[in-house]
Image (cartoon, rainbow, N blue to C red; front, side, top):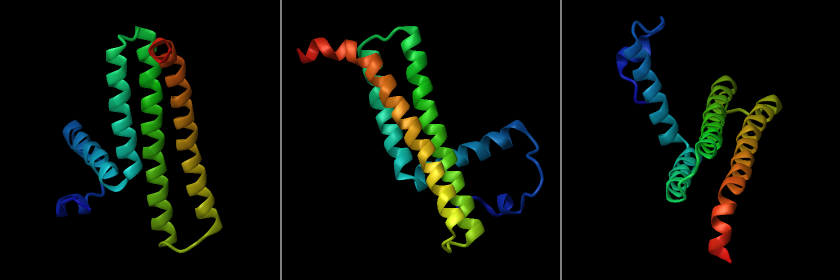
Length: 133
């Protein structure tokens, strides 16, 4: 963990917006360090956003695209939280309920990714089809 000694002893609520923001940014940093899949989602998102600019998407296309991207990122973040909590509670010992919780959290990421792929096909196919033919 990258938290300083002061952070390890904090047991009360954050005292300011800036303290909360710092903790949230540390959470983003940690999920990127710990989760290869989050890094994959991020790189893929950058490429998709680049395509969006290249094809000059309309406002509603951008909204759907951003929704899909954020859904995948949020589900991956929640999946990571579930995995960390399960590992903490089970102390890395096998429990069927723990396995089920991890599998279900991973399913949420899979569903979000499938949604993002469908949105990507719907948005980009009309732009890509003329280039393929």
